[in-house]
Amino acid sequence: MQNFLLKTEPSEYSFDDLLRDKKTVWSGVSAAPALKNIRSMKKGDRAFIYHTGDEKQIVGIAKIISDPYPDPNDNNEKLFVIDIQAEQKLVHPVTLAVVKGNKDLAAMPLVRIGRLSVQPVTEREWDIIISQSKKSK
Image (cartoon, rainbow, N blue to C red; front, side):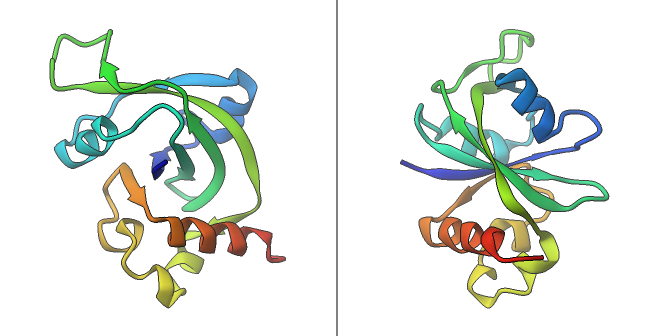
């Protein structure tokens, strides 16, 4: 199983929207490095949902419930999408400042490649973020 981080602008589609909808098609990704990450996903992988914009925080966990497939709403054969399902909100959101302040997370793409909308997350990074989310604010 692999781990990822998916970025979204909460005013467009938030984790609360995903919780309400239960599942959604994750689309709209067009940058080559992000698409490469989508194409590497497998059904059963999991992803943190990260709110961009004013929030800048990891807020929840989703499960990848399909293998990648061509975007049915776009004729560009390079664009792929996945289906995701809401799993759970984090106990406490983990802010970008907290991630950047943890030396063990310094290699994360979230720190190094800020604009990448779909990123891999190592198992160790995943565990650290889960641990951080359980700490009181």
